[in-house]
Length: 211
Length: 203
Image (cartoon, rainbow over the protein chains, first blue to last red):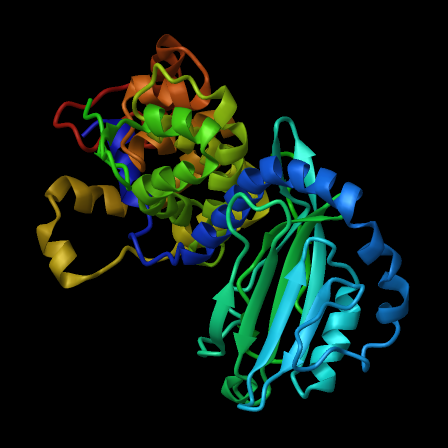
């Protein structure tokens, strides 16, 4: 064994590394990059046809109690919380999404401890990435809260995301977490709703600026 | 060198090299996930050895996010992306210097692992090397950062000289020359002797 080979003795023994979270982060970034091409088209559509919705936003932002119920119609903030008689709740968003705090309050008004966060994406060279990351690896629990979900068709000009959740499936003391990545007012990524182990607000850690 | 290939999903399955996946991902970003699935476990183990289990997942994630962002600069004449990924991992580890140094010291001060099964399977050379751990750890800690990175890519990741050159962006002759310098330094630190060789070398 030569001198270089001796250093293998210093290598710590291999052990488990959970790379699921790493894959999720990559998937979010990839989704954002793929969506960015569609987003530019969406932005044009929104400017041409979405002015009415934007103009109506102000009234709804401050009136979270006046949420649509049963009909699923959007408020001007481009999100909706709809309670069903079977105890499920549907959360819907569209490209004009704004006022995450309002959505958070609306969910809390329905008895769901929730955090809704919107975070910016930044452009670096020809690629985009989140300006910060939520590292939820040790803070989430597996709970079958999401009953069904709906995403916009891949090539739609304006789409809608929605999740129907069962609040009773949230473990005691936990919180629902929705995180939405935006760029210039457009949604570029949406994480699958996560269930936080406790009701502590998650922190978005800035991405490394040197990479 | 073994060229790693795997099936691309979907209709019209075909075999793609790493370079093929990276090239494809420029048009179809989602295909980059295949590169993660192919190499993340290996890179994660290297990262774990460098920064410890607590940070391993984060550093692995940063590595692949950086790779995704830099994929436009990938040299697609290189079929195997492992050296490129290791090079990025090295840079990401470099941004966690304090954690890396802390973990290295911790490992250096730890007692040699005494797993019976593993111990029984070790060669006498490896057992000897374990006894030299404190001295080797001191050499490792005293190396210039770029030399340490090279040494660990060879000794811990098992990269060839050519792969190390790709990973670190240096020439193969620079790799050889740096490794020779490390050999001499190590020998000197062990009292001018390589205890792994029957023949003693002085100098």
